[in-house]
Image 1 (cartoon, rainbow, N blue to C red):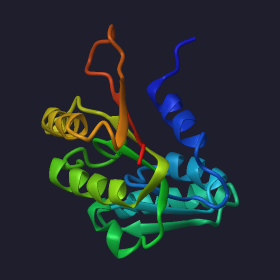
Image 2 (image 1 turned 90 degrees about the vertical axis):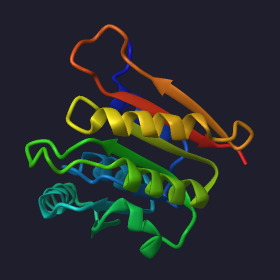
Image 3 (image 1 turned 60 degrees about the vertical axis):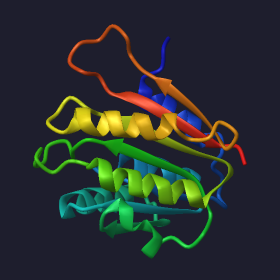
Length: 182
């Protein structure tokens, strides 16, 4: 069976994460990625600009007994204010927080700033996954800017892949995967 993009995203990251790893959830949302990462890594830094996301994630982590995540109510572009260590893996879910204000969306400028900072701190062999939800106002612009950014990464320094449904309607999300080679 073909894997859903989010399943492939988790599998891709899990291959490089261990209990010594420092990882980033750049878009905390409802906390599912944060919890996934917290089960595998030594430390998770999770970012979101919405208090609702932090509250939901905190409840989810507490219900699962996970205590190794630092939840940060701030934009992912500020991660250099919080993360000093080398990063093993990072995950982004671009778009908006489900069941919340759909006018609050990730923005190309802050997404690319965060991605640049993560790639600079990423260990060799480290990985980043970006789930791109683009079927909303502003989503197409972010999609194009993120794709252009990734397409222009040096092939000597990064391996990149795109995993995308081809026969689905209503702008299905797709996955971008990045691995640091050197």
